[in-house]
Picture 1 (cartoon, rainbow, N blue to C red):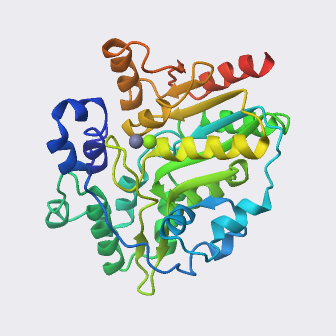
Picture 2 (cartoon, protein in one colour; picture 1 turned 60 degrees about the vertical axis):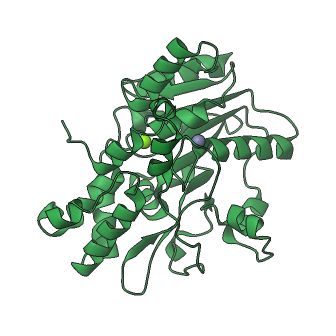
Picture 3 (tube, rainbow, N blue to C red; picture 1 turned 90 degrees about the horizontal axis):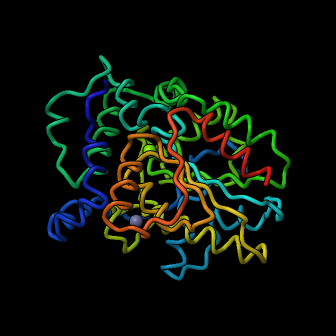
Length: 328
Ligand SMILES: [Mg+2]
Ligand SMILES: [Zn+2]
């Protein structure tokens, strides 16, 4: 069994039980990261081509009323997504696509593959992302390079059955699935893994925190967006991402998707799944926080959680259900 990481300890506060603790405690927890958006760093995935990554900067620029065109705007205007897709499927990344938490795995790039206790002791509840920035700074100080971090990411194993699910989605007719990734990890970790796995092209869009190496070789993360959700960490509410995306795509297509699917594991996947309707399907990893929160909600507030729930241990179970629904 893996020991509980600060990441897992942090997210367990977010969710239903956080509400029960009252706003004071939650407030203390969610004030996480207030990094200014800053200028765009040109070292961001210059090697990866015109991909559909959305790091929230478009939202931020809109809020600021800025007129400058961002990369996300350019990508959106390319409109490469087949307009007739029947289904929309969202994926989380950590513990959903990969069988670990990438923020924990990056420690393996550190000398001796561990963090000194003086650094670990700086973790404070509610300050997860600041802690992570200190970890990344420490790695850079220790001479850990972009290449080292990429190497660690590339070795993270896929979750059981996930390669089968990816293969299934790849082999479906082009009008079947629009595939979107929404993660509170960061662009560098996710891109590294997906490219090595040969799965990058499967995703029409990736929503995550922008991360770039600065001139000192340190990976610097910025928040994806800001939002008002009391349930989620400051830098990302996946429900806002999902709602905005579904609304925008519905408008662009001129009609809704037949069904929306969400595959996840964490407490921060519960919030977006709450926005799904009765024809949609939530695929929570069995006995992980998202699954527990759905179960608790069904008991405490019947009718509040509307989507059909299909828990999974292997993603092959997701394939089985998608096959049935696609055949309807
Ligand atoms: Mg996760
Ligand atoms: Zn939220």
